[in-house]
Amino acid sequence: MPELPEVEHVVRALRSVLGERTIVASEIRLPKLIAPLSVSTFNRKVKGRSIRGISRRGKFILIELASHLALPHGRASDTQGRGAGSRKRDDNLILAVHLRMTGKFLYLNADDELPKHSHAIFYLDNDRRLVFRDQRQFGVMKLMSTSDLSQTKGISELAPEPFGDEFNFDYFKSVLKRSQRSLKTLLLDQTKVLGLGNIYAAEALFRARINPFKNASQLSTKRAARLHQSIIEVLHDAITDSSTSRIDLEQPDGFSYGEAFERFWQVYEREGEPCVTCGAKIRRATHGGRSTYWCPKCQRR
DNA sequence: ACCCTCACCTGCACGC
DNA sequence: TGCGTGCAGGTGAGGG
Image 1 (cartoon, chains in turn cyan, green, red):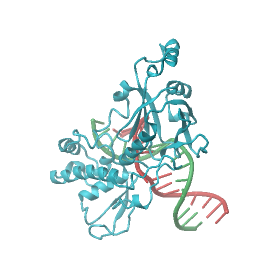
Image 2: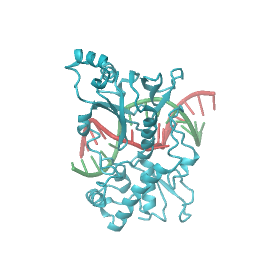
Image 3: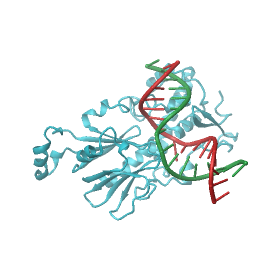
Image 4: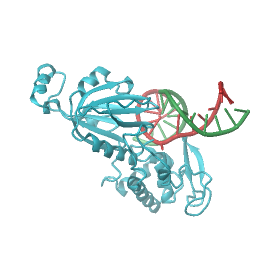
């Protein structure tokens, strides 16, 4: 489900409730979620750590967990006594979470019923629980020391953040020039362009009035500039759009995407509907195993 | 290095 | 009603 704008809002929602909380204990019901760590190792490493910060890299949610030694002295000395070898003294941990298609975080009271597909439960020091729920079980959690983040496979290869200076036109042009793939496929490659998924890739191409099937290396400079701008804008607008930000960690579904959210989409899931610009019927085709939508008139080849 | 296909899962909407 | 099929917003492994 989530692309960068939704992940950004999950991060903000988590930040608002997890501020200075401490994880008292955790429970993993789906071991592959945290592989290759074992459940017992994961639980042991996480236990007693306070949440120091929550951020985002691409579509990864990064939850920073403070070193045990930062805790009040009673527990700190306990850690030192046994764990000198098994735990790095000075390292904070990062819990990197990818929601993939259906991952969601819930913030529940102690007596709330756990919904189906609750795979990880973090018991907090305010008697509430942070629950990771994921119907399709594609989501992943990687626990690592902070210093390992930049070398972690799946994260180190990510393209620059779309709102940062590094994602400038020169970078984008060089990515286009080297690729023989279609633009639609290229825009979904997180190692080239970060943050788009199937929806916003289609929306960015529509805004730029460029055909999704066009070969990336053959895009004119003028069109490339339009596409570069559209990518940044569509992500920015989706974050700003009130409907995207309607993410409620207390709802069983975590997000309440309603009609308001879908109104943001101009081509996605609008096959047969009139283009908002020219009135032509929006088309859909399967491309690389995924649906893509475009206006045949505004986005000619 | 690049690019493609398939695999990972559950659930839902559809046609028969 | 049930059953089979295709589809779902993401990525990674493994092949060419």
